[in-house]
Length: 171
Image 1 (cartoon, rainbow, N blue to C red):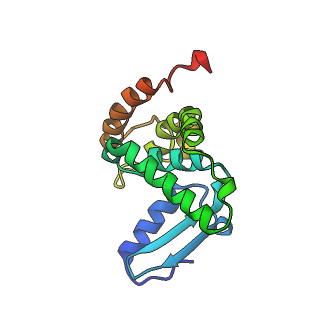
Image 2 (cartoon, rainbow, N blue to C red):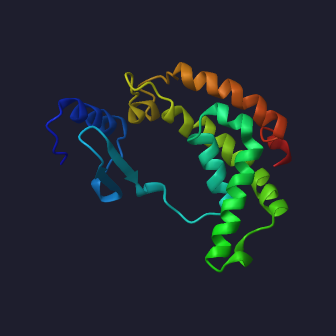
């Protein structure tokens, strides 16, 4: 139960709950940062994975599209941080080489496409026009993508094509 005297906060949380039909308290951790700022952590999709999948997920669901112009810088920074962290923890042997890491990233390319075509549409959804995911899945409601998502996917699809991630015949 959310206890807030601010009706705007309650309305925003209600919209989130309405939008996210799988919003169950068992899987969600909520921290109140202030009267108007909350942190929601949904543990539904938590799983152990390799660093390449982790980075692909972040790049194509959570970062602004213009960040991808600096793709190589982001990848190198992620790799350097991964390497230094594992070394600091005494597990440098678990870190792939830079070349191996780049191969893993490319291998996870189709995963990035999948995330950009599904999750990103929800991330960029218009907050004033939440779609009922349950009704869309039951085909009771047509999908109405936000302009922000359309702009993002128009930028990403040529990038995916250039990297060969849309060529499913070679899969």
